[in-house]
Image (cartoon, rainbow, N blue to C red; front, side, top):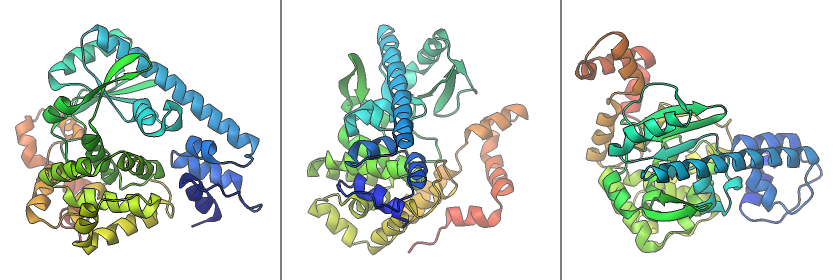
Length: 362
């Protein structure tokens, strides 16, 4: 790692060391910003920071504050129409994990509603001046009003990725207050599984996603973490959750209960994969967008054949792009079940698709 990476990581881990005179503050600024941890770094660092770095952090804080105000307003409007809403990530997650909406960088608001309420929520956003950016797909729809972006969900992930049992999640979800407004929030085990799915999907390419996991893990009792493991096993992502736990232990020295430590010890490949992921977090250029390897990683982390085939079948479920393509070419959606494999081959080629479906496991 570079000196800038080492300083950034040390401060995020809670060290009170001072920066060496040779530190390149411009490089550290870009590194912290690209990984979504600039505000957290500035809050934790006890030394003197360059003015331009403090200015950037204040700008980021202002942006986060405006987003929090937008969420507060939307929660009020959803409540007035009798619609339950569960914010995903964003200001609410920042408040839960970091104690302040301004400490976690967000660019939009992800709002989850029940499937039966999705159409009413769409109407609400349109009534508030939000314009849909594309037709609704199989799990969400994007809206924009001015500089505000909202992703309205009825599922938390696209069909090609593992998802939560949302019926059970809604039953367990807590009712909380955000700036005087009522919202729903995942129960702690559900939140941990959700953050695992999100992180693995993006291959934990940004440091903030690893830090989210470490902070969420610190809030879990052993029985809650074991509950999350049982849920992950049912979803076919037990290996992904154990890898995520090991990643938290490697990166931010998270303490794991003996049951999880023993489960990881029984599968040496988990530690190898977690170490490889961690070595790439600060060693490579951040890749914040979903990559095809995300689906491959879900497969590579599972030793159970049934779990791997479950994920392979998800990989062939229709995407939003498939839906739009079918509409343009007037092809029935059921016919796309046969066309999608051909589209994947045409887009990625035989070799990448083969490696995504049958990745090498170490």
